[in-house]
Length: 532
Length: 77
Image (cartoon, rainbow over all chains, first blue to last red; front, side, top):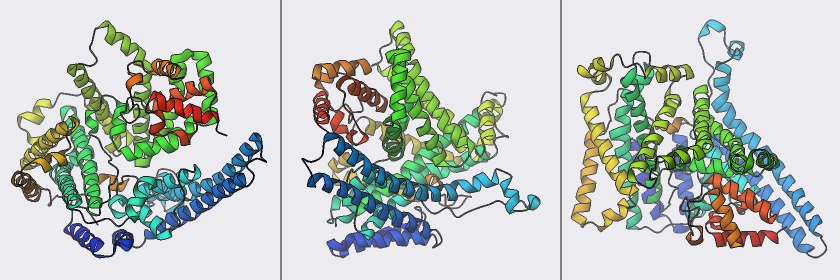
């Protein structure tokens, strides 16, 4: 069920009405039914996968939790009989037993993800394909990719690791756990949920509050604005430039990549706004996944502001896992002894940065261009750390005031340029296409041909769409600057006279209905992150 | 202990007023790499074993919170 359909709006409206009609105690079951109805709407075939992940994670987490309790009970029974070393040995023994369950769950859940998401790419890219189909058949090996498989797998595994680490107790109600995994506003493209943040919110029957409804509706409207006015219009131009990359070069290619930067932000953050808005209608607050990433002053900061829930997941479950491992600690000590304090601190962090960003890259898809996307981001971050002392000396020598607005502006533009380079790799169909596009940017011989007659640009996308995208982008930029200065737009709207507030919202509704892209040549445009 | 912690923190990032900061993590003044370095230095200095379960913003938001964490860890099995 696509977000930009009337069916979806009807589905949300009916489920929200029913949510507040049924008794508070069973409101979570209404959300569970709605979530599974939403999931099954796309077909029954992929439901087995989410059920498998739900059942294995639920039961294995219960087992890990039982082991933790058994260990605590043993310690409580013999508080004075056990020596320090015996206590430590007992804890390690139970930790080892819990780890076996976690590893088994890891193999099952990430195994499913690997098979459905990566196996077809591996088979189609190797001679293995000829073992399945005749060489000249032109057929490709394909599997059903369950809706939201990356998101619910990461959500489930985050929960399992938390139980392994004894962060909180396992959920004992299968229905409630199934709701946590399948909650429909977050199933397509996240945010990747945390049980300690979302669980209690889902299971509590929320009171009907006008502020939740109005804030939810505002978020949904703002999400549709980003998606329908900006992302779904510019998609035609982006598809043209990336799809026929060998026809374009110079500024036209650069414009296509810039357009993709705009499209992916408007599409993903717009979709997240819709998800958060829908959840808010039930009184549930989903994690914010974006914090105006294009205003970042470094790539490190950019990744703290872009797809925040994935970054947090990687930090808590991959970055920290590597960091607290014995080999990492030993390597850190070795580096400090051999390289001195500064570089001895920086070099080991490369060991955590590269695995995290390669994982982020391949999380997006099974292609070499995503691997390079991850490697590129890790390299920029590592080089930034490595060269920081040199940069500091240069800026000090040039007497640059790092707190000045000009310097901060320079940092934002520099970071954005680095992000733009990464987008060659995250959208191009192949790695060679990305490299070709990147190299062709420097060929400016056709610049005047593109712009004097504007033929290429208007051929790729109608003039009306260009004007609407420009107007929409300006509005998005203005609102983003207001938010960046610390203003909560929802609160600011609430303080306005009611007539002014409703006029603004009504104007935005009209703008979205009148100018949204509903008749794309590509039909309904799916959420970009829905395919990940 | 707090003076020593401030000295360690200044060695990691000297641009922050640690004595008066109570949002080192929540205010994004220290990033993950700074925290890694901090943990490493604290482990060396105080012989404590900081684990992944201790990686909570409230344990690192201020110098006094870090000192309290170290005190707790010294008595933990």
